[in-house]
Length: 588
Image (cartoon, rainbow, N blue to C red; front, side):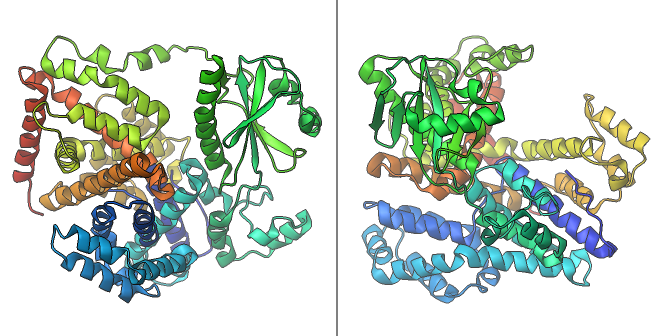
């Protein structure tokens, strides 16, 4: 998407649109483009503290991995935050221990000096980091320098804003919508400061009428601070009949008959909205209620569904029932009166469309023709992957990798697993990155997304490029580059054309290893302490499953070439191919 914000000053207009365009692009491509991650000083400090608090056996292993992230190596950036000298000193001391000095490292990171320093630093970053980056961006947008003068800084701080917002909202669409909301005049859409939440409509209109440049972009901080106030979420559990007075709570979920009197005011509210029969119609269902607080409705719904899935398993196992969570409909309320939500007319019913058959056929059982050891080994563990996709659990995804890569002679440890994946993933890193950038350019070029004027094209030429986007050859980016004038679009093409070098490969492999160690840390925390790091859960949710999909694509794409090999030797051969690829890359 390209933004078309206008301003009296053309320089300001160009910089504002570049900022919005890059923000939107970064959010869209996190987890898609290799190397785009969401780590900041704040996220890494939280992960370090989580390991110290919850991992009683080997916290030093994961702290060392988090300390190795490139964020900590950029000293020029960390200097802006209070207490940074102490953090860098502690990091340096940590790496001065021998590689296998596990006990000494563990004692060092669990002592009060280390924990207090990181806790204080993390607390200071909680809002300071975001506010500081937003203030920097606003100053760049308003200053008299040309865009290129502050471009690297603008991109750096934009990533901090986008990463922080994704972490708190757990929804790319909600974060991308902020670029529209801060310019909206609609009272229900503009992100007002928190103290305006209960203000009158007239007060809010005055706020918007008196808005200025700083206030407008300050709305991004307001969006960060937004909270989902409704604490109760209600879902339908179909195919269960109960008496009107039935109510049972298991752990954090209450199963209750829909005729319970506490729903009387909810029903009246829904009746006024014309939604009553859609949600409460029928007799063969229960209501599952969860009371929780989250930053956004989207994250609250995600958490509630996972909780209900877990507790419904006990409910069904205990009773021998087959209750099913209706995932399409839910209500939320804070007082069992005022109510919002989404109600589906079809419930759990799904009508198979003409494109669904092709989607169903897109599976390894259909694609892997012939018989060989690679196929039999790969398909043997496919149920583990299907389970992980259903649960969206990092622990289940990691379990799938473990069983898929297990060696018949010696068990494959985490270092080996991470080495295997980070090597093999490199085989299509350049081609997939280029493919995704091409797709983004093609989608953005669509007349539904942007006007020809924004690109510097005639409508006829834009239509011609759009036609080419759907041909086998696709758009010739060199031709497009020669005709357009849009700075951000030109930079996207330059990103696509950037050579894949040894340095690029090394940076991308560091990214792979960081993500994989983070996922393994989640697996470890879940198995040994039954806890999950909320910061890692969100970031990995966007990145880790896609990495596994890329890994699987590579395994499927190269199988025919090495069909005579065992699965173990196939993996070793792909690692050799990755080494050969790196050896033939240009240095710069």
